[in-house]
Image 1: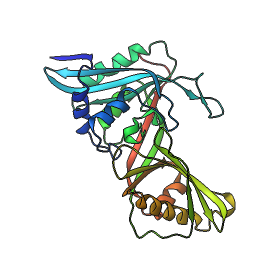
Image 2: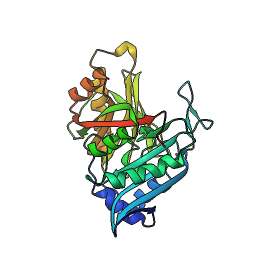
Image 3: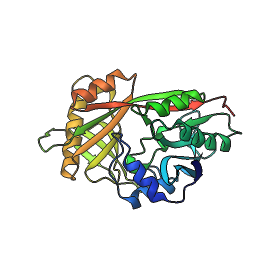
Length: 286
């Protein structure tokens, strides 16, 4: 008999998520996953959610799905700056077995009831994903049955990204110099790129809990050196630096309509892993 209850065993949910497949579901131990699931922070050490709820769907004693949702501790103002005056109601995770739409519906209804007074509700909001998975919060394309359920309830696609991954090897050589800044409390690190003693760009990298893996959050080169191959030289320098720190994999993502960035990553030996999506709904169905 199908039933939905509060999550009473985080280990069960952890084991369930371990069976899921997405390029950003890095292998992580239970304690690191639990910290990210319950009390997650962003790269600057800010608590992501002011409150979180979790529900689990059981068929008898078998876990067939779970959902996590809550209101964020901050958001982004009209200028794109982080503000504690802004908060989003977010369905952070919603996963259920293929063919168990009945479980998915019950789980989704729990969150929508909680957010019944909200004007907008978001699902799989990128920035508020789990830190142990590099805070990549979007839904991977293979979960078509979850996407279809969201559409059924009135959610539409907010944003689509292409996910990339590259091997980091020892044979990367570049004359670009890297200046690494201190690691933040949220396991992020910014870098400056310099060439001929001039600053030419920068990037930011997040280190999930998985050994040997890094996630590139953004990278840029100055306008005056664009279209001169400098961007590729900076990427080469970054890979070499990461390799020297014990990394062997560098992941990143970019908008589906950002063809220039996609060309850049593919030219620099990143492999396209698939599309991820975030969702939102304006007029919810009760």
